Length: 348
Image (cartoon, rainbow, N blue to C red; front, side):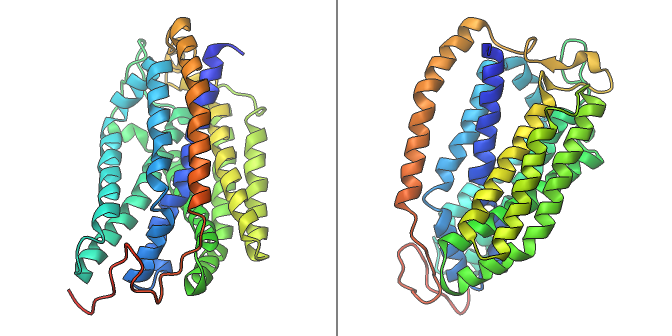
């Protein structure tokens, strides 16, 4: 395996790690109004991801940094062409971070409800935009002969890319519900399980439709054969079907594992459908960016590989330890004195 292919696969791994780990974070935030009955329960829901959400965000930084270092032309074209979408994404991410930090800074119920609302809106908006952005890599965007952006903001939207954004939101909601069923107890757990069951079939249908549509788009617009993209797509479909079965049979741990596998296989489908290109050009396919014409020098990739081999296992071990330490279930229904939670108020 040459270094260009190795780094393409590694970037795909970073995106898969981000979507799997941050996916349930987004799902929990988006479910706040529907699973939590009051401010205390919603605070408990945020506590389930409080110790880990910022660590999960690290994978986004790594994925972006790796893309910049390994494939600078890809990074530059994508960030210039997707500028307004990524600017909106950055604003949503900032507001989401602020909602974590500020929702408990006042005794006002109105204040807390407002920041819980911000958390919900941003937890839906961010995966919607990420789904649209990654789908455009395969669907294609206007590029000139130098690989530069030659389109407008509205070129990012098509039936396929918008569906990809919506499907990503639904998958993350399902993923978040299965996570909550493992990290809560009492009434909060019961409602999390009910939410997971209600979301299971829509998520499985949306996820299966997305990966199969991605394969069709790759064949039509990226000059790909059905194989190998169909293999991770079928794995995603099987994983999501098993998630439905496990949720409805009360096997929450296996359901969560299958939603994680389904999301990871979905990312693998996108990148398998993309290679050897990193950004498809449409309508002039000849202008597409590839791993060859968008990559850094062999020496730079070699130095980066050594760093990645040292740093990546350390991050994985640290995150694994963090999840082990913060594995206890939370309830948040009656214990008004739980540290970090503000007692229920009757008014603003």
